[in-house]
Length: 257
Length: 257
DNA sequence: CAGTGGTCTAGACCACATC
DNA sequence: ATGTGGTCTAGACCACTGT
Image 1 (tube, helix red, strand yellow):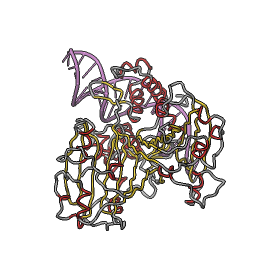
Image 2 (image 1 turned 30 degrees about the vertical axis):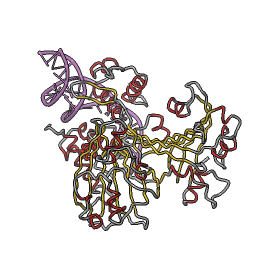
Image 3 (image 1 turned 90 degrees about the vertical axis):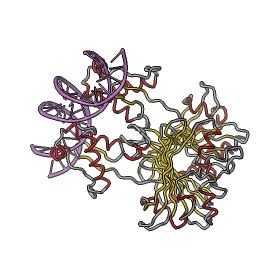
């Protein structure tokens, strides 16, 4: 084989065909057997090429059906809404997340599960807790228009929220932050961190992710005015379904020439 | 071959060993031949398992040497600096990006290449230009401490910046935004968008990315006070090297209970 | 040189989807 | 029943790394 391996050459060729729209509107590729004949290659080589494209997120193979070009539809994810007051028109019986989607003309739902756990090391560190400290975690999987949207796991130090509505597995209509405020721990500063990586098996399972789908992990750490951390939210967003958007104004620009 | 395929079982086992640190400090796995014997599997099956982990970003194979656990070191990327004035202590002869890294005690450099092109469709759309309009693009690849850091491609409408320093392939020490201001197009609003996906072959090549490394694409659109778009910057950040960080203050929280 | 991963082949059996 | 992708085997040759 030359300097450039055969399965890569085939992958490049197929990628160009995909980008040129050669397989639309059916979005279905020729069968592996046909590709073998056409490219004069063994099935392994053809499959190596297809796997490259699958791991780039361009294709998915469906057992017994064929290989298909993947679709992308982006939903907008706005970390900024954390510091925006609830819009007045929203249905007061719905939690913020669902109410916001309904206002956009979408359908939304979420599952909630509350547990008392010792948090992962990175969460404990952000909450400035010793490694064996206990937290309440509200684990949610959010769905928009019938499609899995993202995971939201919110951790609160147990001694702060003990006995409050945060520990109950229901929607908190007025918002967890209102509860924190009434407990004397108003969240006034926030740090947002976004990590980009491949999902671990647990995340892949919870969000039904195929290969080649990276995730953005938005970690929100909220602190009081004195700097005490009161809440860490870990949001896991499938990359093929989200754009993260911020809007900003004013000031002088200058991000490096 | 139960319901759960053999190569997945082996991949799970290896993943656990990696996370438990079984292969540190050398970070080297047993050879494929040894894994075949140990797991009583063919080389193909072992390699299928290793490829799963490679596509999760956990391993890299090095020809003739072996399989190694991948390292992660995150560098902080702050989109916010766009609206922050240049710190007074910085070396006035360096451009903002390099000067900021030097202030952090790091080494930094960048390559600059300027071209006049018709922009990609998504850039043209954000600049509100017809598809055949011409832009100036400043393409930079930025390096920190000798390691490739990210791609920054900044597009400006040709008729706005024609004849200015923006069209020259040098550092603009006072910053491109200062130039825009002096041309009468001060950038006062910014939209940040972050997409998460696998790199295309061009990006993978420019940033020397191995398989299983997703990228974050930070698209910054700057507009004047009247809403006229004057600049689109496309930043491609390898996920294994970056955290995107925002710090915010004040206001009432409430991102959905 | 021997050992390692990278590529490729030919052939087999299975589960699943479709008709 | 047929065709599809999913998995697995055994064996081969190559380029590269280390000694």
